[in-house]
Structure formats: structure tokens, C-alpha cells
Length: 387
Image (cartoon, rainbow, N blue to C red; front, side, top):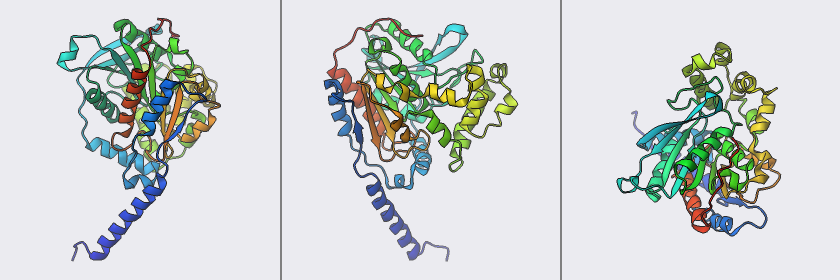
């Protein structure tokens, strides 16, 4: 009595078989690639690298993006990625705002030499160097290219950095990233520069690239992981709670952020009301709209949406999305009128929100960056940036 019965075992086995079959049906076709007309040789070769990547997710991804995101987060946490050893510096913006830079230590043999490549990493909403998805990428970069210098850009007040003005991070302001790229160029003038962004950070990266020519962007390659191409689609989707994950994770992360910086943020908004936000949209209406001068949240989302400038992206860029992403809905891709000459979009059938299994996204990102750098000639970029 109380033991596992044969019918229970048979039911469990049948469930696993059904999930496996469903997963195979769901993942039929593998990675779908979308390229601009007449892509460059650089982009064609990079596309071949991405297209040949094996995507073999576990059976439970067939349960949908919501569950896949939660389980993927659990699995990634259980892997126990170690926090990289970093050196913290800051960059000051006009008006007194600051962002943090976590410089990842390189092997002792490389520390004495200036890097030939610097990888600028932009985390997602309320993320930091401690985010597991960032640690996974750093581990893969360090393994594949130990001489590359990785630096994580910490958005205003994120991680354990101090928020020095009431205006925190937003999805629309690209001037902070521009200042960081310029800072890196001045620190390592001979190094080639590339960037990787996650979620909100990837959307910000896409907007940054679309607002500037390749020369002005100061980057030779970029990867956008899980971008929200059209925030007005994503914003509406996040207005309803899916399994409580949105409210308990995304919104609560924002509330913890403003509470941690209560003294500074409280100078501009009503904290008591703000901390009662139930969705990301409500939070943005109460915080971002008034502090950044928008008339309505729709105006902010339109300004932040990278789909408006996707046709202008010149830097060789991989944008990777999952068709079942419950946060940054892949339907936003349809809002893109045309692809810029440097933009390649890849879509996997599953993966949830930046929770691709087996380090798929990190591996593909590193291989894409290496392909572009190996194919394209080093560029000597002008020190002209839009700040």
C-alpha cells in the first residue's frame, strides 16, 4: 500500500511518450531564418552557421511557452552557473545619471594584453551580472574565446548599483548604451566591438542599431535574444496574468527596484501607488510615462518599439525569438515593414522567454559573432556617436 502501482507507471510512461511526440510535431522545421533581400556575404555565412545549429529541446517544451519559461528558469538555476569574477566601474551620463560596467576577468595569460574583441552585454528587465542567462552566456564566451573581453552593462540602478537620478532605466533611451560604446572605444581603441542583449535589453540594442548608421553605432556585430519588436503588442499581452508568472516575477522585480531606490524614485512619483501595480503596463503608466514626458503608455511603447527602425539596421545582427515566447510575443515581428541590410531574424518553435534549453542561445550567439568577425574586415570606426 502506498507504493507506485503498475497503472501509475504505465500512465507516466504514456504521458512522456505523448509529450515526446507532441514535442517533435511542435518543433518540426527547426530554426526558421529570415534574411533581407540580397544579403551580404558576411550575413550569408553567418546565416549558414545559425541555420546549421541543432535545436533539440526536451519534451516538456511542448507544454507551451508559459510552462517552458518557468521550467527553463528552474533548470538553468539548478545548473548552478558561477558568478564571474568582475571589476566594477561606472560611466556618468549628462544630468548625473550613471550606469555600471562589470568587466569580466580574463585568463592570467591574457590580462596583460589589450583585448582584440570586446563583447558588451545588456541584461534584461531588472537583470544584472547575477542573472543566470547572463552567466550562461559569459561562460560560453569565456570557454570559446578566452581572450575576448566581456563587459556587462548594468542599467541605471540595476544589480547593486546606485540610482543617482529619479529617472531610471527605460526601454526607449539608447543614449546610455551609446555612452558605453564610446567609453569602450576610448578604453580599447584597437579592439573590435560587438554586443549581445537580452529581452528588454535586446530591444534597446535593436533600437540603438536602427537609429544609427553602422559607422555611428560603433559595433561590428550584434545579437538580440528575445526582443519585443512591438511593445504595444507585448504590453497588451502582459496585461493578463499567465499562471501568475508575469505579476510575481516581472512586476515584482520592478517593484523591488523602486523600493530599493525609494528615496530617489520617490522624488518623482507616488511610491505607494506605484507599488500597487499589478502589471508591467500599469507600472509603466505610473512611472515611465510621467517621468519621461510621454502623454500615454501607448506613446512610450511606440517610441520603444524596435520595429520602427528595423529596416535601418546596418550592423550584422542576429535577432533570435521563440514562437511560444509568452512575454515578448513573436507576433511583433509582423510589425516590421522590412529587414535592414544587416538584420537576420531566427525563430525557434519553442524556447519560451529567453529560456532556450541546452545553452542553445548562448552557443548560437557566440558562433554568430565569431562568424561575422572572421568574415568581415576589421573596421576603424569614427568616434561620432549619438548621445
